[in-house]
Length: 472
View 1 (cartoon, helix red, strand yellow):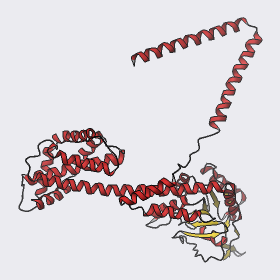
View 2 (spheres, rainbow, N blue to C red; view 1 turned 45 degrees about the vertical axis):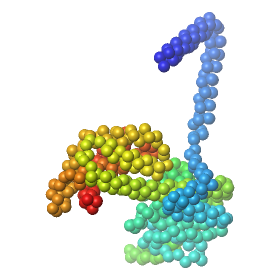
View 3 (tube, rainbow, N blue to C red; view 1 turned 120 degrees about the vertical axis):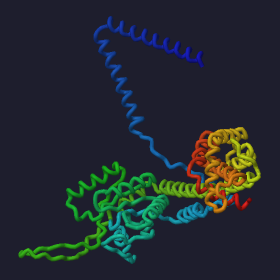
View 4 (cartoon, helix red, strand yellow; view 1 turned 30 degrees about the vertical axis):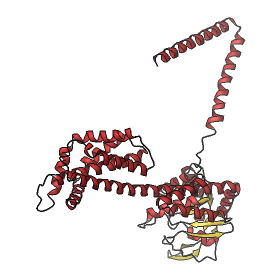
């Protein structure tokens, strides 16, 4: 390494000397040359510099890197689902996504996910689009509770629950709506004014789906032309001018207040004019641009959703199985310790059990650490145990006070509780290291082992005491 550094320094010095010599030579020649040559040389240098800046903006700045949806191999995903089903993983949610994908592929429809705040006019839009449909509308808001699908020509309109709905299941409904967006081709966001904080938050989530989006300003007829222009400009600025804005009116009822010459006021309820054509044209333009790409992107989104649900099911399955392994080996440690002498300052006494527990958790997560790595984990956690065994014994002894007649009993039962605490802490430390990092990391395991062992352990100790008393 030292030799390489010396060579690099020498080469750098030589390059500096060569460049300096060339620059001085050029300067010397320019000093002796006529003025017009110096002037021409300066112009050439400036043109080269300008050309370099032009290339930078042309090739780099003008073509920002576009985020692409990571492709998922469908065949591999289907095989993975079958393999996980064989393991016992609950693959129902992932499998349902593939069933839905096959269903939508068989249909010649473009799915439109319809978003909007409560009373923004989603139901009125569908009623204007499909007058024969019997839709319940309510000026007080919040009539759409379920996800409904309506067909208009080759468009399938997915009516999603209204935003800002004061429902206890609002967060869950929002998650379901985002999933439905991933299954759709295009998103329509309906609003009747400038975007609120809630609407901006939802639009930010919709941006993450990378779906084509059309913003529809409903009830636009109640604004003057100047007000319309200001709202449209605000909508475009807040969405970084990425999405088209359509001015529409979904109809419905409006209350008009009249005042006669005597100052008396009269109310009149009348139908608002319906005009949804601009939104339909905007949707058709997006769909017509490249339907094949929209279909491929829809397929990729649903496959990604299926993969996500499979991953979630695997995580839950592995965690449940890992808990069973930890509980099983903790029980074995408790049983083995009832007949042993003092725990001492190491877990080498039950090293075989500890090794087997770590191996089984690793096997569950399909990682294959070397035996020396497992030994290192046990050695490092055992080293930490030396400085805390007195505290572990104290916690174990205190746990026995909860059982009348035992008082501060010591001996085999206390040692059994101690070993149970040690194995439980070790098992969960290994589990967190593997599930978080994807590998068996000795340092991370030791740190988590310390937290588990010296953290709130009284409840665990009492449970282990019950276990030890049953064995005893």
